[in-house]
Image (tube, rainbow, N blue to C red; front, side, top):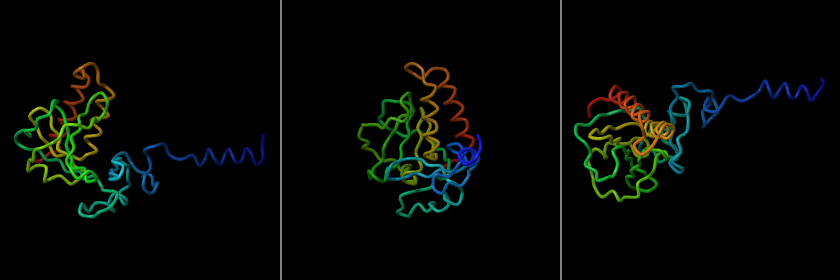
Length: 187
């Protein structure tokens, strides 16, 4: 078989798009493994971005649909006094809702709390809305990029077993928080 049909198939095979996750979701340029992320503030979706697209949305004061996720990690002395029924949570300011929301990573991914958050802690004022979170684990409190929180939630969802997550989930938590401590500087 030769001719136009075969030539068309060859052209399609040669022009096959890169695998998912290898291109910027804003401009379709190829990106590497260490690419940045942006938050679509309307849909609360994380998207992968090349460096130029990432830099377009870094101004936290801008009222744009997209916002770049910064890479800041801070550690705080003392836990956040929060009356929640779990030992692992992250809180961030959701600008669409105009309030702080809490999510619990676990077997279902990141589950949003339905409990009213009627407290204020000055550490919440340090967060860049929509893109940074306070990550609480036991008696530790860290300010981290929101993509790190969702990344942890995805890893826990994949390995969670039983009521408390099991040994693999505890290992994931240990590894994750070792990395957070390594990247963090004192607030």
